[in-house]
Amino acid sequence: MLGRAFLAAAALAGAIFTTGAARAQQTLEAIRARGTLACGIHTGVAGFALPDSKGVWQGLDVELCRGLAVAIFNDASRLRLVPLSSSTRFTALGSGEVDVLFRTSTQTMLRDTTLGLRHAVTYFYDGHGFMVRANAGIGKVAELRDATICLVAGTTNEQVTADYFRSINTSFKPVVFDRVDQAAAALQAGRCDAYGHDASQLAGARATFPNPKEWLILPERFSKEPYGAYIRRGDDQWFDVVRWYTYALIEAEEQGVTRANAEEMRRSSANPNTRRLLGVTPELGESIRLDRSWAFNVIKALGHYGEIYDRTMGPDTQVGLARGPNEIWTRGGLLYALPLR
Image (cartoon, rainbow, N blue to C red; front, side):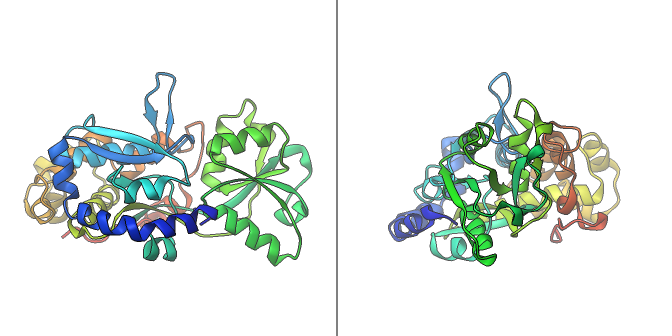
């Protein structure tokens, strides 16, 4: 998600890259030496990362962080979650404050080529939308001419909103905030006519409103927002770990390996792909310097991608999002694991 903070981040990238690349060469070794994974997450949006009533962080991105800790240590508790704002997330990663971002961060060309960072893999597909009061009589975004629109600084949503209103030759009044909760509160307070953000994050914000049914997410989508796991450039081995760990969660769903049946399938499956995935044969773990049971441990602890999605933001949660494009490819979605062989 490019905004005003992008230029500032790009200006810092040169200095960060010189020290960051050297540090990145030893990311996995540094994680093992300190005994914890540092994972950047959102400051708070339901479905992706939000503390529950006991103060425990929950959400898709949080679960992906926990799973990566399991892949490395076979221990989800060996994890430090670092909430980061949209405007600080990339500098925090580049400076070494965190090892990886699973933080609703759209993959774009300029982010990938100018910040000294690299997106390792796409794990969620979304698009920019707008939310309004359900009783406002607004059915499409073109009816928001000259509207006041709440936006979050440091996101692609600033640019997408500006581009759209420029394309229909009309003005709008942006009201920009540092955090999602601030923008959502301003919308509820009537400081803006609409809130522009990725549709999943609009749904997450709406889920926390006192009366969610009073708010409507308009059906149009105005951008491609593929969320990627980001790491520092210059560490191919860490890139491989983050990339293939994420693919393993998707592959497990494709093969029907669940949290409940992983042990039985490890014992009894004759499928060579399943045996490789679950560590019966050791070559996958050896190739990325992890334990042979790395993927089995993750699936046994958290389940496959679909299980994680369903319990964090699926139809039976307060966010209530159908899988849509985040369904696996054999069921009409865009998720597709590269072959783990």
